[in-house]
Image (cartoon, rainbow over all chains, first blue to last red; front, side, top):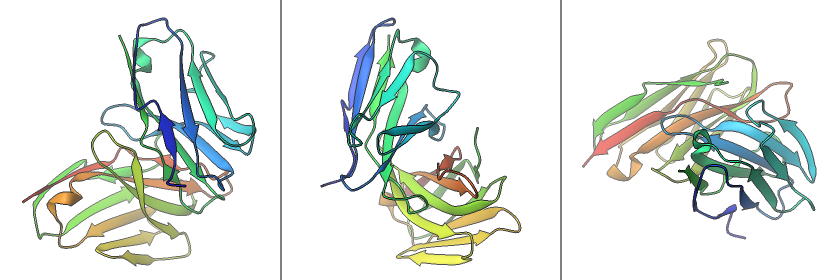
Length: 113
Length: 112
């Protein structure tokens, strides 16, 4: 297992389209996090799973955003009816337990045109 | 919301010099972490320091934590051009659910 994998690396979509991103965490990590990062800013928390349970969601996660982790392994983040303001880097991270440090994927860069 | 704030926002130094970045935070923490991010890439975990620790070293990195001042510093000694990146601090708030909260970062440029 070489780390956290995210797919795709880049996504360009037209405004109004739906997009889905995938994150494969480190296999023994039961905690999975999604963040959004815009240019010049630090990552902003979106949502967090422990195993398959989505335990916390940020107010940034509007109704157009949904995340799943159906079997406690990989996770998907879907954005419906994309807007230009959704353009950002979407980062996934995983950890084995709280307070132990977090491993990030390389991110999916979304551009909404 | 941003929990940590790094200072300075940008730092430009010559290879071989030391680079010091500071992080201030607002609430009590379980631990504080430092990450590096190269342009357009994901974050790489550098070092984690727990709230009951005052100093940690890892290679050319030295991190200090002062919980009374709610601040931390990251020192990179003998910097190299390859250290050019953005550096972020992140905190796990105490009593919370271990969700790291990041600052806006320090952009470090090391000139060869």
